[in-house]
Image (cartoon, rainbow, N blue to C red):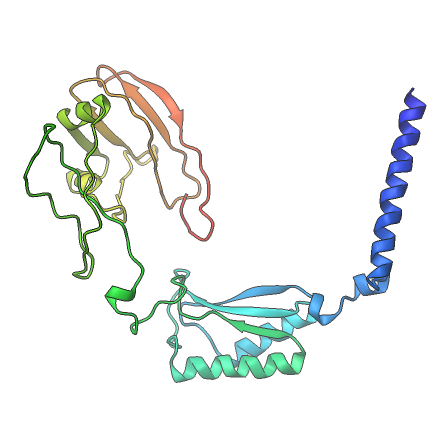
Length: 275
């Protein structure tokens, strides 16, 4: 039985390899073409102009180095990577001259030259885009009321650059957990002090909380949420900028003895220097 299985596997592998060879032959591919692919099959790569640092000489050397190793083209992207600033401002005459020189050099080297349509990660941003036509953020406010017809002023959600438009007002039966949370005050403290702790309740997701460390030999920052009554926590999200950090959630009934609830998974957000 084992021999039969082995024979079947060998026959299957030979069949697959034979069919793949036939496809390669039909497409005109040869071992030499694989080792030395045509220009239209060579990979392209990102080429970052970082923090206004660019020059014709640097552009030319970079393009030459990439062409020498078989790169088929570049896609130029102006970004900030927390480097010391250079003097070549995006979309300035000098900036455009560097790009134009890159296009000419790429033509000479026989590689492709692509460009992003704007500065940074915003895809199509710039001072020519008005607030009304810019990307929007959905904002909201919440109010708990007794059931039945009501007429009350609702809190104004936050605005950005003076722009705000109503979309809709939704009323729904509150869950018991939501009511418990609404009626259970929470005291928040952290290792960064009171001025940092209040940022957790400012309804602004972009606010950064600075957690100072406890002691020189204990690199631990902390946030403490104290409730008068037990609560159920459905979810928690923590975003930070330290790749080597580990985060844990602990719970206590007396404020002194804490038990581990869970470890926060440390995952890098693609395109962001955050975890």
